[in-house]
Image 1 (tube, rainbow, N blue to C red):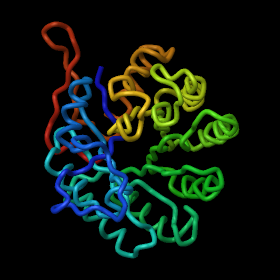
Image 2 (tube, rainbow, N blue to C red; image 1 turned 90 degrees about the horizontal axis):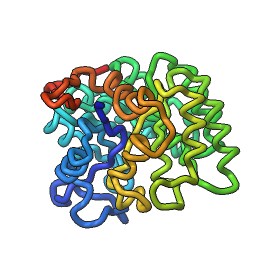
Image 3 (cartoon, rainbow, N blue to C red; image 1 turned 120 degrees about the horizontal axis):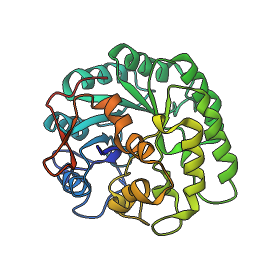
Length: 298
């Protein structure tokens, strides 16, 4: 089975080279670097990673993300986050794609106009479409659904990852928010990241309080559209469970068919972002991967 982590935040341990924003949200000491991510992910059997620009640490300075993706082309592709209210952002995204192995835009709403249906957001999505990359939709609030829906309808050929499925959590709003997430399945270009169990659970592994919501999303969207991500570093973003436990939720705990596990844990991500990541059968019959340099744009 090929396993790909579709959502891992990265942090440099060199603030002189990569300055941080005011009052950054920090991971524990020694966690979060691309080197530590490599150790953590390899120990869990993960072959490749989509690295996420950490706005809560760097703001919109994507320097560490771009340098890391460029330095590790065999197992990392970058997901940049840019300010839609900054006229320079479309040009920067185009530069990141062509020079630094960025393969996705993490799309946020306009802070100025408080909507996804905004000229600045659309300008970034036009670059996404023109460059043949993908978008990750950072849709976290129900009131933003109408404007996000307009964007999804306007760019039906752009593959869009759905970050955290609107950050589902146990509580009185869970069922209403889940219904909203399920209704968005009508957009066939929307691929939910079913990583919210780790970020939202109030219980230790196996986190049964969010199994129902996760399975409903998988059944509604289809396993062929669902993506696993760790939300690394887990010490900061999924404090109830470790990296390996987050993976085990989908490899063992949830009542999935084996074909569904393979799709969610890696096959979907390989098809979209890592088409040159080739599975092979080892001498013992186990499945491993050959990683090829210069992974192509989807």
